[in-house]
Length: 379
Image (cartoon, rainbow, N blue to C red; front, side, top):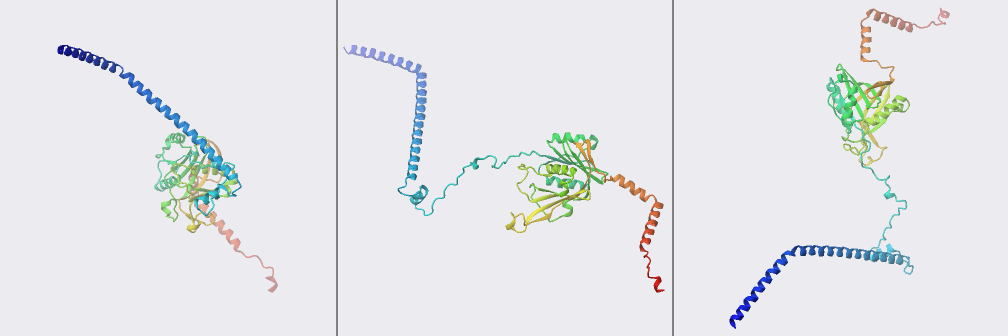
């Protein structure tokens, strides 16, 4: 009997081991199914949680609407005779009544046309450069003009053998629509071209009486990169070619609003004055009389900064650095013509002698006293 029990236990143990082996194989085969079931349960839990949160949010909104309705009914109730803000102020313990909200019936706070625009919309760029053969004074004048224009771009010295039409291509490569070009001739005379490229017009000037900022050393000063105030004399509104010049100068010398290199200040003035057929340029600083009057426009002083120069208009072209002549000055004499006249006057001494004799005779005739009719009566 004990042996049989042993054998039966062995048989049972063998069957149990075999069953355990079969169970482990089934568990391994269904491991993927269990993982998928766990993922599905987690997704279901998340969906249920989101639905519950949405239901709670709807309940909160209904509760807020009910509270607002209760507050409105409390304000409309006249038994207590107190308004909502005053009652709330008394409940908080403060003696001062709460300030009422300012009404905005026209929705001005949301109006787009009133809000400040901080984007750079007026895309004006001015190319400022010179030709070969400029002197140091001409180069310093070009540097002063560049400092006055935060929206300028630079270019190396231009070779005139290429032709003036090449300036339009240079401006296009630099993405500039305005050009200020200084041309030096014989290292003595300076010409200035102010043009709107490529369509035009183009103004040609001869520059006289040049005084740079470093040369005159005036007391004025201004912030580098600030926007200028452009002032034009009264004749700029009366003559047609001066009106066109004013429009072009406004685009060239006026700094665009919200330019990346500019500063939102107006602390200097560029003045253009028309006198004797020429344009006189002056640059001033705006400074208040006292620190308290810095925002009062009636109590401001002007202090000259520099540079100084005079522009003599010569001609207006219809396109960029070329085209048909729209206007020509009848009073302008080129430096070559002035030298020819000087040589003619100096090369004829006989003519100079005759002119001097005629001038002396006229002067003597003016010195002769008229006859006195009472002179013979007292002889």
